[in-house]
Length: 288
Image (cartoon, rainbow, N blue to C red; front, side, top):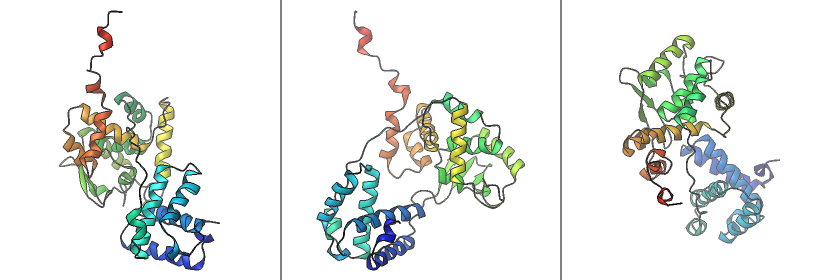
């Protein structure tokens, strides 16, 4: 039985109101699902009525449920976001949201592959569709959903541009297309003739599934003998880092990747090897 199903009728009605509000505000299906699950767990943990829950109940929930189960900072953050929105928008109660403190964020470096590793991953697939999908993710720095939402009309081969519509933050952007990837797309199109989506599943007119795309990458990584937990997002990180190493201005990289803040893009300066490798270690000057 799910946490939502365990709620009493009154709490369940409030969660459904929250769901309708999130849908109305055009939150993504994934975000709606995450928020509803997190809120249901919290309300189920608190045995008192919704209007009697206070800030101290969040502290207790955080310590006795989230921390006790060693759940991630991400889960903690999602839960707090859900609680904040629920009380401020559905229950019109600001007490919780004003005092709510979010967990300190981890500052992890992005995972980056070398150009040789990327080439090895892209070479192993003999299936043209599979190879083209992975190649396009890397060559344009796409997120997984952005690739799967592409339509044939989004490829502007005359201007060497890929139009990425309604991406993260509901923003459109463009990414440059190299002549090499345009040739690959043309070869793919001649073979598969997609109708609605640029990359379709077994049935014409249906988009390719996320699970199948991830499976394609795992298969390629295994065949390329790369012993790293590579994800599709690693290809995006690698693209940005390789652009930076090639001398591309950080502002252009920010635009191509669709980052709202330049601080997000600046993280790639910490993983680029070109400048770091030029640093001479003082160890070399020791007479030992």
